[in-house]
Amino acid sequence: MSDQHDDLHAEQTQGFKVGEKKTLDEYQNLDKEDEALNKWKASLGLGQGKDISDPSDPRKCIIYSLGLEVEGRPDIIIDLKSPGALEALEKKPFVIKEGATFRMKAQFKVQHEILAGLKYLQKVTRMGVSNKMQEMMGSYGPSTEEKPVYEKKFEPETAPSGMLGRGHYTAVSKFVDDDNQTHLQFTWSFDIKKDWA
Figure 1 (tube, rainbow, N blue to C red):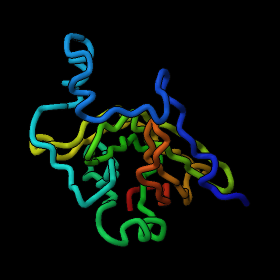
Figure 2 (cartoon, one colour):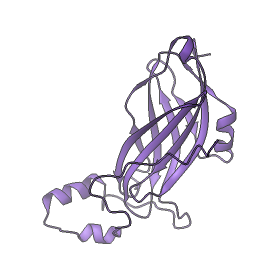
Figure 3 (cartoon, rainbow, N blue to C red):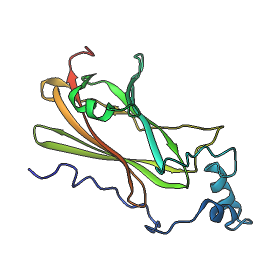
């Protein structure tokens, strides 16, 4: 069996050239008179608040957590910050009730430069059958004291149901940007059961 990560690739954002980067200062000074561009820069939070990038940490995007929101239930949060958290994920599957509607969400920090076209990719496998999805998260300026953590909520999903839907699933998740830089990739698992326990 080939490496299960090999085929998890992001679709390229239209009009984006890989490797064509600008520094934050270049973005700040780019076409100062262009109203649409100024609105875009403002939407990224450029120049608004103190940059909290850690000079000793070269990462451009730090994924803090991946969560599962279900109405009327406490959120299921996968903490990705603590040491050993990624290693423990695959061994400790969490339970999702069959047919439940849920929404995934990610919390993350951006530092040093603009993060262009961040995407969340996921491949879920059960009994040799895989299902892939891609969620566009967007572009972000470096986190600031005013907005230290970004949160992105994904489109709602419905868990499989019935006898055929119940069982053990393995997932590979990947956060990648328009420069094809992978910021985090990990394997985790979940069980679809009749109820939440």
